[in-house]
Image 1: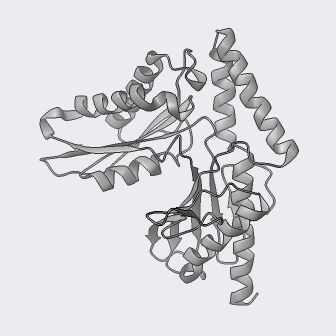
Image 2: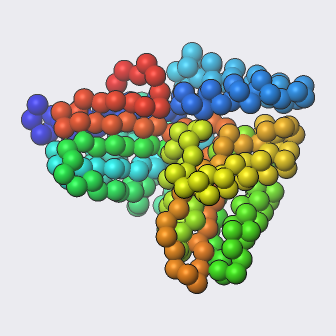
Length: 299
């Protein structure tokens, strides 16, 4: 293929992949929801889970998005410096979002700030959001795609704690967010926590934490223990599915961290709703692809 043909091909594949993630949840999310459904004992919780799974069945059967809020498209790109389309990726992803908007279709969710008009294409100034990690000496490209909804991830929260507040302060910040906002984010939630050295570093880590597979743990054993303690603590609040009460309020808690300045602890929380629409695709230099989040997908 010529370079132009490669760009067109990758644009088409990404448009189809974005559309697919709007209609079908990742395999690990479905498995976790099934597990939580089996553990609930209240009739209301069971009815809500049954409705969630009925929703998923109809989305696939009717070939339409499973939630009316298809969110703002966000991409985390881990791209090798030798990937042949690295120069074209941002423009390519923007075009893929436009194609997915009309072909899937997706709700129009990009409003130009201050001018207050909807572009009608799901793209605008700075949207879709693209975060970059450059991988030296690699010719492959990983793309995490995520639909950040107005009820779940977009209303994230970040602050910088004084060092004396310690990890107890981190815990208090997370639990305060869950008790004040968790109901609005359509539980059971996937909770992403960033602990770093400033608001922007913590915020980005809390979003990246939501891209991890459910059931994975931070490689630091103390951070992994904190993930478990926070999960138990949030479950004890009793939000339950859709905030209507139950034994389980979260699908998991994921913490991502960096080193920090000794005088500050940056902390941020982002929550994914039960309809956690994320996808992960890996391209090689010839645009052969591997999808890790969804089985049986043909692009």
